[in-house]
Every structure is written in C-alpha cells, then in structure tokens.
Length: 208
Image (cartoon, rainbow, N blue to C red; front, top):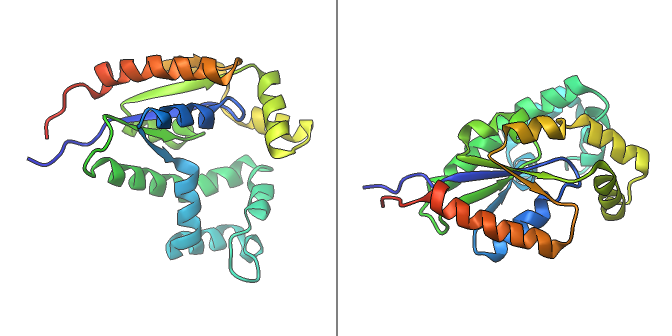
C-alpha cells in the first residue's frame, strides 16, 4: 500500500513574530521544514512559465538586464497596491501549494511536515494543512525585531505590519497560538511542548 500523505502543519504569523525562529526549533527536533518563500523564490528563478507570467503582469522593469528577477523592484510595486499584490499571489500561491503537496507524498522522514508561510490563510494554503500554528508578539516587539534584522526604518516596518492579516483574526482561526515576546529558550520550550501534541494528535499512527 502506498504511503499516506504526511500531515502538514502550517507555521504563520505577522512579520517579526518569530516564524523562522520557531521553525529552527522544530528543525532541531528533526522535523522536516518547508519554507514557502524559498519555494516561491525557486519557482520565480527557474520556472519559465512563472517568469513569463510575472513579466506579462508587471512588465520587463522587474527583471535585471541579465534576466534575473529584481525582487526589490517587484516589492515596490506590490507593497504599494493591494490589487497588484493579489495579482502576484494569484501567480505564485497555487504553484507553491502544488509543490508542498508533492513533498508530502514522498516517503516520510518526519511524523509531520512544517510549512512556514506568512500568508497561510490569504493564500488558501490552510485548506491543505492538518493544523496551523500562529506566532504572536506585540507590535512593538515585531517592529524592533524587523528594524534590527532588515535595517528597515520604522515607517517601512509599520507599513508591512499593517498590510498583513490582523493578528487577532489569524489567532481565532488557528489550532495553536504561540506567544513569542520572550527569549529563544522560552520559544524552544513551547515548540517542544507543541511537538509532543502534534506527534500524538496530528500525526498519530500512520499506515505504510
């Protein structure tokens, strides 16, 4: 009998909430991690159909003279217009979801697979997930983290924070909510607890 699809667990939250740090903690436990942004980046760099759709939608100015996608140029367009952002998401999201589905049907090396994605609900990815974890932190903590991490000014970070789904709305839809205003060690302890719950109640006994 072929392997059953491996359960998928989404990790999401607003910019600066600690999604990547939480995923590193899951990785330390030996869990398989997929990063939606990395999948999208690979598609935009390597898939001719994706590249052509981006060129047709946003114009040649989002590519360098060497033919590489200029993510800075694309970001300036999409973060200034909700409609343009939806257009980009319509190109990328179905393909990212398809790539995730392909991985989950491979022979499992983990009782579940973590999928890190900022837009779990906005993209419709949640429909393919067995559970969703939402990371939360105060807005001030998030702003400070992103300013330190990315060298952005305060107003740039605030604009990105407010462009994303309201944290309360995301938390209401989540299966698990992790508050992450503290230290990495506190986050690690919460992830270890979540891992035990996921192995027992989401992965469970699986046929092979």
